[in-house]
Length: 344
Ligand code: DGY
Image 1 (cartoon, rainbow, N blue to C red):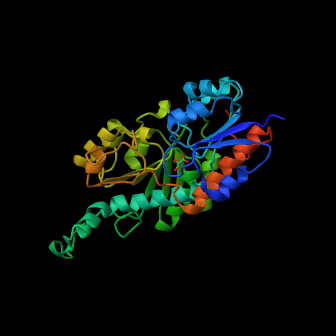
Image 2 (image 1 turned 30 degrees about the vertical axis):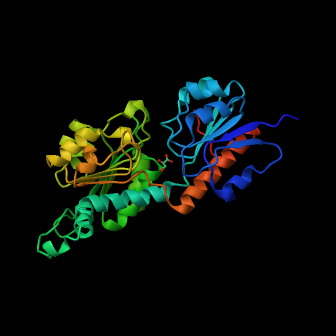
Image 3 (image 1 turned 180 degrees about the vertical axis):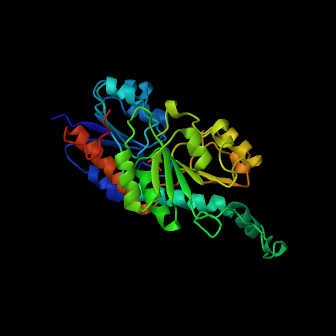
């Protein structure tokens, strides 16, 4: 019997790799967990494969599908995002796509709130002061290092959260902001989906918010105290946060991007921060990552906290993602229902 060949583009810890110890699969795996899979290795080894497990750093395009040939029927990505995958091409070639939503929702929502707090409270510039041994030059002073307060307070009895994209992670972030006293939630989402005021009212009631409302981007920018970018990315949403959007934000607002770097125009954001159009920004993703050097416009901005795409980086979450990706691949190649398949 010919065993289906599966290619795994990263070593995924023993407890996950063990799932592939099966007599019915021919497994070819890139040996390193930390070193990215070499593209040529992948192109050579994928020939004749039935399934491939990739990371968000591996482009799934015509080059890869052609190298695999007509046997390929499943791509499993260890990510919720699939900007690196040519989904339309997969659909045309009848190749299924498995991905890993849900399991990372809480980890990314946690870090989204963390970035909102860090960006507002000057954490980047102040930790630098301490690390550089400069604290003695900055004794406590009444208004030293003050930034806008995320939670409601004696001056601001209302707080508005804004979301670009209102899926699972956005709603988990919303839930975390309720104890901060947030009162309003505005969101912008896919224009091709119908507005759903009934669902919005239910969400508002569930979390004790005065309002949950879908709005146009301009209103979202104008009214929000914090804007979370949590949309899927892709060409239609390229630079959805641009000069026009940033110019309309409140001067005390912060912007958080934990989705995809391509959603935010980095040059425009750096300019906006420099010129004080908004207060601060926290980004876990940057267009062109990981080629983001110390002289990158956002890295140079003291009011911008930049993280190296660690939103889902808790041990529990990454193990969950790797396990789901492995199970998606195995089920897909054996022609069984995949635990989480993207409907294309
Ligand atoms: C994903 O899974 O798409 C995330 O960006 C990983 O952190």
